[in-house]
Amino acid sequence: MKPKAKAVLDELVSRLSAESTCKFVRDRLFSDGFDIPCRRWSALNQLCVSLSGTLDARGIRQWNAVGRRVRKGASAFSILIPILVAKDTREKRCEREEPKETAPGENRAEAPEEKSLVGFKTMSVFRVEDTEGDALGYEAAMRSFEVKSLPLIEVASSLGVEVHTGLVTPGCSAIYSRKKKEIILGTDNPQTFLHELSHAVDAALPERNEDYAFGEVVAELSSCFLGSLYGVPVDFDSTKAYIANYAGRGHVAFRIAQALTRVQSIYTFIEAASSKGEVAAIASPATVNRQESLQF
Image (cartoon, rainbow, N blue to C red; front, side):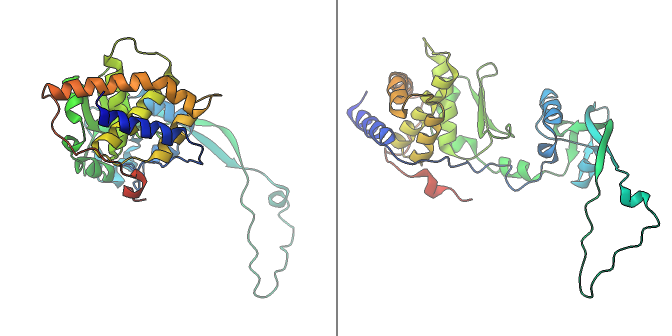
């Protein structure tokens, strides 16, 4: 490892290992501010959506309301809709009961009508991939982002990993699939991309640790290091909070110490690719606070 890179890594380890109060800084997602009805559905119905291979499903009227049509021949899938009926309360049965008087100027709020669940019915819904028409708000946001502008994007290309924008599972910012060799970005945050890229490089290297939590620590520490080294805005507090989430009973510093060797291997791979001319020149090493660059 080059002296300058080693110095950056040493400073990063010292900073992340120090005691401090940290919190996650949630990425700004392409889908923020746009209504996706199925994300308010029950966990069971959201599972049906996921198993159907989409992250946005709606009924025909819902699609028509946003200027889209279901393609001819498209297959629907079903979700469950609860059937609720009003309960028969004593007040409703006592039809002869006189209404209570209300003082002048007093607005007596009516109690919400109680309802009971009597069963379920099915409703046919369609995937966004099976519709056509007006562009959805989040689609426009995704199309406006230039994937080729991402730092170290050439490394992903050299690995045969496709990078594109898309909807991601609620609670996630991006996804790397080893099986499909693709990175799906739900945000324009470059550090998030570096995290997923680190997963891709880690998967390409021998002797990969299959422990999921360890892999997340490696990817997040690597993304913070690469960002610090190459002038990409990073958020150290968010990185530490992320690592702490996977530290288990051990201290963050212990997990970092475990992951350091693997992080250096990822960097060595990228540096070797750079020396072969597979990675374009990028910004000179610098350290920037990612949190300052985000707008919420």
